[in-house]
Picture 1 (cartoon, rainbow, N blue to C red):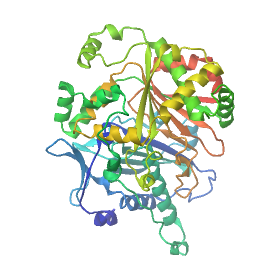
Picture 2 (spheres, rainbow, N blue to C red; picture 1 turned 180 degrees about the horizontal axis):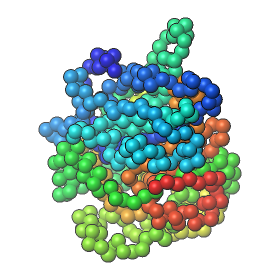
Picture 3 (cartoon, rainbow, N blue to C red; picture 1 turned 180 degrees about the vertical axis):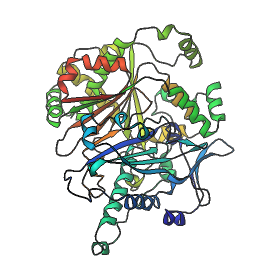
Length: 500
């Protein structure tokens, strides 16, 4: 840690609208490592080595030790001050439980001893300790008899996106491996990497035109009302407490469905036969369409109608100007990478939020139809066209409008949270989560930690020896129950795990 502190230089990094809209979230993932050789006493990196490697990584990413602040105009920024560092919460503990017990429990973190569960399910960035927003939280849990290790890392989403998070984890693991080498092997050069977190990297693409944006997007980024003004008046930590208070009590489950690579490719091939000539539907197109139908129908069956008669609903509808969405529609938002769409040589080095949330409304006729290959092909084609419409022009115009005023992001954040029938999907199946090798081999399984935000689906990779996709649902219990009752979906998946 001392080496990191001495390396810190004063910096001020202004956050952009996408960062601000994500500050109520954190990217929190569990990496599970199993000791296949119980006779080995050196299964995993020693605590001192692992911690030293983490702070060595932070020398390249001092933003993780900064403070979130607001200037006189309302713009938020990260202040890095060598004399007032906001150090991550880092713990490395032993657990009187065998790793095999967690395997039997389906890697359910709520089956850990009570004193080790406190870090999981944090609905806002990794802790509001002493009024400070911690930007990172690390917890290492070493299971009894050297049987396995859990590495849990939670980083504020306002600082990194999913891609950036994966880059940081792999860098930490890379440095750890280097430190574990023998003295002779250490003669090899220290592996050099460069991370960028200066938000100005994508400012050059901003455009003050709006012709490529849909009216609903423009409305979301230009609406101001009493609620947005009040939220902007709050300090960053008070605002997060407000979001936390809203999110706590929202019942949701964490469900995990496994689909083999062969199953998905066979489905894609069948659906492709009904696609127009010259259009290749991807597995992501087909899987997204499938989820829209399954989740859309599950949500409709779970909607008892009491909500739209409640006083809270009437108040929200009035305040939102009837922007909460129609009951017979599903609003699906797909996190679409901007890195591959911006012609910038440094995009791959950038760890901040560089994606575009593309929303589309699907009618009841679209998500209530029978799940035939032809119907799935038609819907997958629409998904394909929606995602393909995201280009440099769209990203640039959205970025300009989202950053035009300090509070431009606020109504799009709050307004979307009030939408009745919504689904957020993000596909991380190509992210190198299984490359996170601290010197003891790659993880056996990688999953998001539970969190308090619902209506979210993650598509994650599975272990390379198995191949396929892990579909993670963070969704209301009634909706999950309807999904499990859907025989079409359950025939598609190979395995199902759940914990609340």
